[in-house]
Length: 412
Image 1 (cartoon, rainbow, N blue to C red):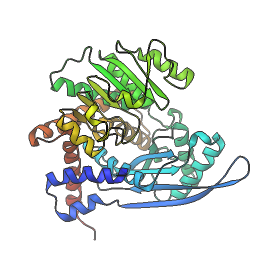
Image 2 (image 1 turned 60 degrees about the vertical axis):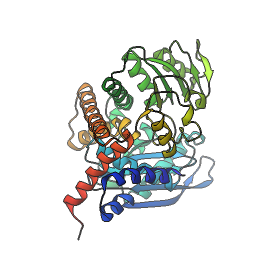
Image 3 (image 1 turned 30 degrees about the vertical axis):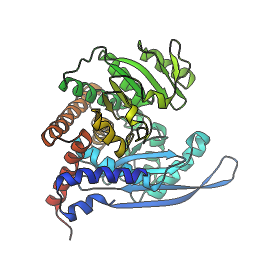
Image 4 (image 1 turned 135 degrees about the horizontal axis):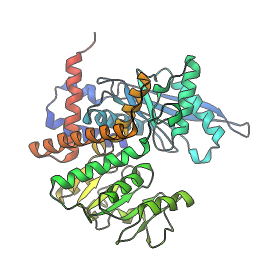
């Protein structure tokens, strides 16, 4: 099963609960449009390499499409379709006026110089300019891209238009219209979902144990927020391995250790642990914040966490979902759990459109309020319809997209 087949399987499971007409079902099942390109880039040694890029718009029924740009050697159009579909549901479940999109380039950014990466980015934006705009499709960062890449994208689009257009992308540096505190908000939103879930289940927060797979912006800020709430982070990992201490890790010191050495491995007063083993640790909360398809039918029976909070996109396969549900493991799905990232992007976009900027604390408060409300909507529906949280989140999202379709009608 590839990533797109997985996204479709999740959608079909929720759609069966909704009893949509075939026409509404088909509109939501298929992407609205997609563009795949090959484009040349001059390398530093004067040779020319050809790269493949994609941009998919899944839906624009609820507003302009929104979604990240991923730079990774294994990017495929199927991956991008899945990410675009998930972004449609993500925006709908938190009820912000975006549709879903995604993009990517098959490349390894770690093997490109800064100047090569800039040339690749500017050429990709030039090729994709037929799709992107502040009113139509707003890219943002994803795996392998960052604030600098977004700055190059914004500048390229602006140079072609002849005026500065900061609202064309989100995730930019603060100096050119980015959102202050944006990096922390996805992790804080995930932590909000965890704390709400434990509160509603009557479970003690103080001393509860947490394992976090992935220690980038999402994972590190999730760990920091949960530790601040009184929980004990017993294990974290990144792409090079992990560290484990059942008595707890000092997250601020661990972040400083990774910043100094580029990895969490080697952190003092902790044992080494593999990514795969981290997923099977005895703990109260497991937060997979790294890669897709990490919890599968092969390892789901050995997952001992009682609550899984998905910080990554698509970390749990449908077969694993069934096993986890049978074993009484509650999963807070990605389209809800990591949706504070796109919610923060919404505020950045609005600020850039109107040239008015809120205080960072005000934005953080608004994002947390949206996440609590969205969690409550999904949790209530899961109890009402007796379905798991992923199905409930998809039911909330697909109903809102279907309502927009019915209200707008079919043109012409």
